[in-house]
Amino acid sequence: MKPFLIQQLERYALRLTELDFLLSREDIMADMTQFLKLSREHADVSAVASRFARFQQRSADLTAAQAMLEDADLQALAEEEMSSATAELQTLEAELQRMLLPKDPDDARPAFVEIRAGTGGDESALFAADLLRMYMRFAESSGWKCEIVSESMSELGGYKEVVVRIEGEQVYGALKFESGGHRVQRVPATETQGRIHTSACTVAVLAEPDEAEAIKINPSDLRIDTFRASGAGGQHINKTDSAVRITHLPTGIVAECQDGRSQHSNKAQALKVLTARIQEKDRSERAAKDAAERKSLIGSGDRSDRIRTYNFPQGRLTDHRINLTLYKLLTIMEGDLQDVIHALQSYEAAQQLAALEIGATA
Image 1 (spheres, rainbow, N blue to C red):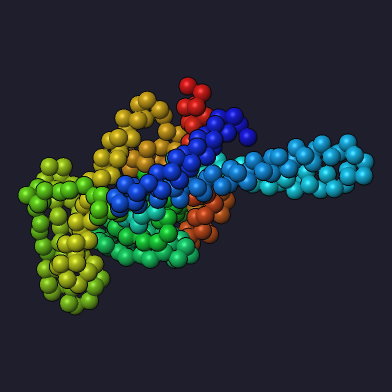
Image 2: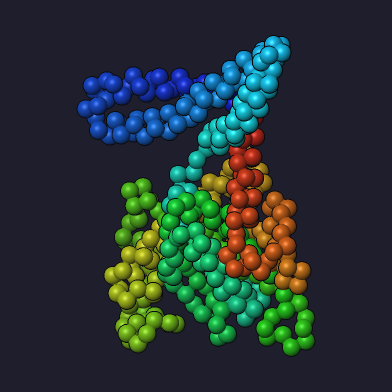
């Protein structure tokens, strides 16, 4: 294991000793807020420290087994122990590297996935519907729940714009790299000459705000409009002004919801989407400032970035940020996104690890 990682892990061991002492103090135990905060940190630090202790033990076992090689009677036993220790040490090192990486507190949160048709007219809207289906199939296979918040359908059955809320384990952490421009190359259903067209959609993935930590919006900064919902929903939803559109006047950011049957539920959901969009704007602005100092190789997630191409004639998906090409486009469009998502997560982890090493040696 690299020396800078050993140094980081040794700090965890020291911090665990400090936390054990702090949590034994009466004044800390009497302050429930501080006690819970330190208890959460103790759980995280303890997990890392225990794996590091196991790593140190197996390192000692490997050293002892190597010394046993000099004894001919113990050579077979030594080789067996060396093989076992080496294999476990490799696994432990990979685990510890992942545990040391900075954690995005939003990764565990539900997410809003916004898909908008771009260049390409009706074909772009049809591709937006294909992307929605892909994400919903992936969500279903992951055991997540989906709920369409708002939709604006095209004449041919596609989507000019659609927003879906996805809830489940580590939703935002899995989908956050989907933000950006998605380009499709294929023969549209409306094409009579068999020519390949190129069109595009934009995707934005927003973490649903934690109500306890969400930014506070001044009610006087909001304009709330109600209107009759369009699209699917039955007779009732089309006869009442149940749909809600909320505009944040200082930024001009707009969110609407028309999926629910009551104006109250639609207003609550639209406010969540609006808050998520405002927080994403703040996040993007901070990321832009950081990118000026340190280029992000995965990309900022800006909707204008072209991140991926779906080439149907060749059955090929290419993610341009990490030069990943997969020739299984049809299964990916059916929701088989695991290989793409894992590749992006692994790349991010490698970049974070490299940044940790640079920071440790600076």
